[in-house]
Figure 1 (spheres, helix red, strand yellow):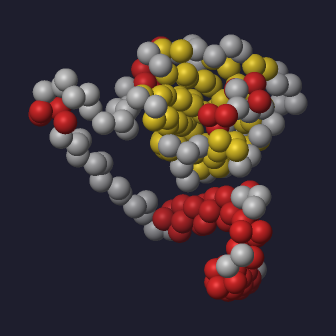
Figure 2: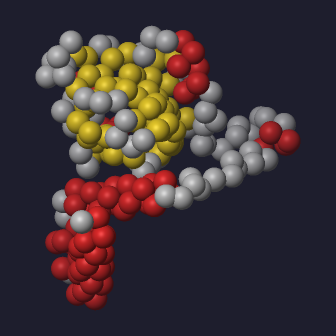
Length: 195
């Protein structure tokens, strides 16, 4: 199938989960959406050629071209960039119902972020231990941090009312301008090092 062709298949639901296979021009991701007691979150897993490895992120405020992912049906994701956690994908070319049961299970076994039910035994109310973050080895750690910086700048750029809101608070606007000037300076300096 050509990368210019897009398809959409109806969504699948499994125990209040919606699980989709999302394809960009270069990568394939599995995206799971879940709601528990009024709280929503998204999980994205897969391999990214552009980001250099495995992707496994969760987010309670996922975005698609700056809008809430939860506000758009999957048919509207096509042609847009998905932002979950610190990851921003390239433009989506296909969204389809995930068919692989093993992949669906790997996404849906994520523990809901909502509090435990009051009917559960006391021992199950204890929070699960957090997994320890392991920083990637040098120099991959700097590549990862540059990707995060790019994501954060893209997020600021996509916030349509940011400048208007900052203009109401001159001190915040000035701090924002100084920060952007520092970013521009560092980009020029790093660019000079690369030749």
